[in-house]
Image (cartoon, rainbow, N blue to C red; front, side, top):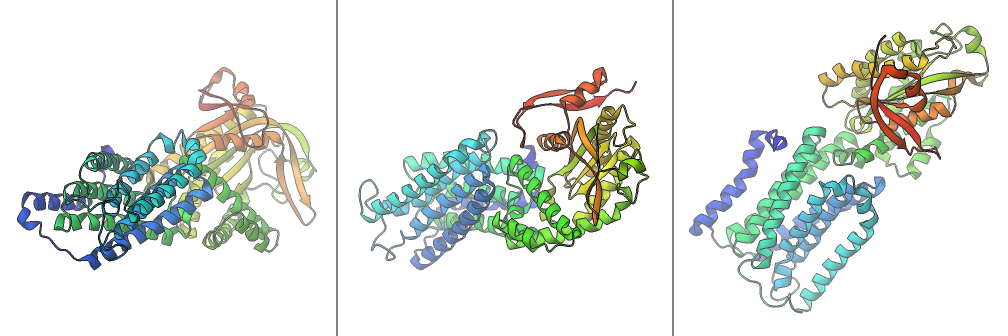
Length: 540
């Protein structure tokens, strides 16, 4: 319950008020007045169903784009409650049938019970270690849910057993009452987990999801105990509308800040999804910025990204961020090796002017895990301010370790050791620098708890080092499979970790401490790659 304790006390009290009010109405029956007004019931339920249907639609889009199991389950929770709530609206006498029946009247508790299962699953291992199972079964789950709602509507309209006959005085009576209290427990679990996510990630949508689950749990209690058309019965209708409205308002706030669906629901995505989004966003920013550097039109790059599924808002954000990153690159140009700045440590004039020499190097890749979520919820000025502060701490560390910064790419930096062939201890230098980058970033992250955190990849191996490009545009670079492997090792690490390859690990000898990660399957490599999480390099 530690996460719940962090909810502001005023919010906690506000969430308790409906339950207190329900208890008062049930304890004092004379206060639980009856108000039988069919038009109000129809429009109240229909509006709540419509809001929920929109949420189901947008979360389904967000889930499909990045194939995120958690958002898939959340979209199914919205869909089940919206669909059955819509059927309940048809229970209003005179809308579809002259009189209501059991099928339509009990549709709401049935939909809420099913939704509670999906909600709890979205915060369970089914949305984590076993996410692939959910993604594999997604068509079955969606098709089965739609078929169930269609069958429920047909049987109710045809007045077939067991959904025929007039509704009882309590819509949650009998077996539904038992299932309703199971649903209350599931919503409570979902709310607790959502507040834990909020504590870890923040975000208006994450918090509003927790609030909504609390309100839906209270609605389930009211469904089970209230009498039809009495004040306590109207209360659960209002609680459901408030729950869905809370999520809609949270989503609207996040969308206005970030301008995209990935920014809106970023707080709900799995870590693996966020890592994938990070890589896509960083790659996209680099592509746009590189086109600008070459003096080319960015329209072709943006068109390619649009075909990949990027929205207009995301493309605008990418363009603006790329321009800011270009300004950042210009600000750090003194640190970058080129044919003009040949005096950078270890890179002699011969090396800088050569078409390329093969030598063994160690390379450090560092990027900020969670950069995409951060950047999509902040203005480009704030993003660049964050990058400036991190690079201000990191660049001197690389400089002190004897590394050559090959390039900045959005939220990442690549540094080469032994670029000039004069660092026999290059593997140790690179490993120490990787650990030092993590340490240098800690004070910045502590001062700004919501900022992303560095993850590092280090690898040792042969590479061609020298000048590449045409006469009009040349740059110093290192090219080789060992460079690509370092990038993949970085992507395999968690925030705050330094992951090293086999050659680096063995080069460190007995002076290193760490934990084996086993043989990893990394993108672009047919063979498994052995890796270690580096914890320390002893000083002799």
